[in-house]
Image (cartoon, rainbow, N blue to C red; front, side):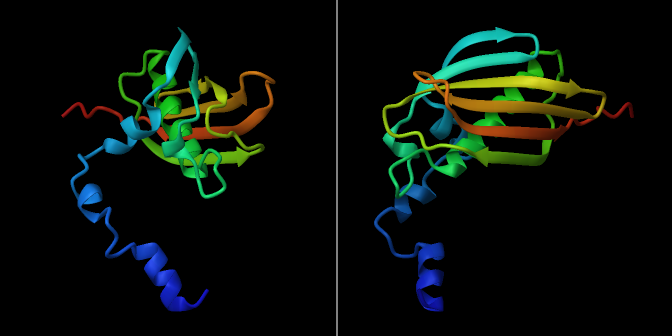
Length: 153
């Protein structure tokens, strides 16, 4: 692939989707990725949920896109911090995702988010995506967040 082709690929100019992309509401990504998730269990420090991989979240190989997986680690990792009483979920400091297997359209995926530690300023969680039928791990993520401290001024 030459430099101009790479530039065109990244800039996505002139496609028939431009008006759609420009008209999307702010913060649409969370709803786009998490739509269809069913919460199976919520307890202090743990969330268990499931979803079927939708076609909107697959890559060119026709399996769950790595970016969608990372977004799920972010979204569910933030949510599980609330279960231990944190009033804010703060901002991401680091997200690490290990991709271990592919999940294809229609496959049932179970996601488990667990609090590893929530302190005064830092929260660390783990998020694991597994194939519900076999238990095989699709991805394992760790999410570190800075928990914004309220100013007393």
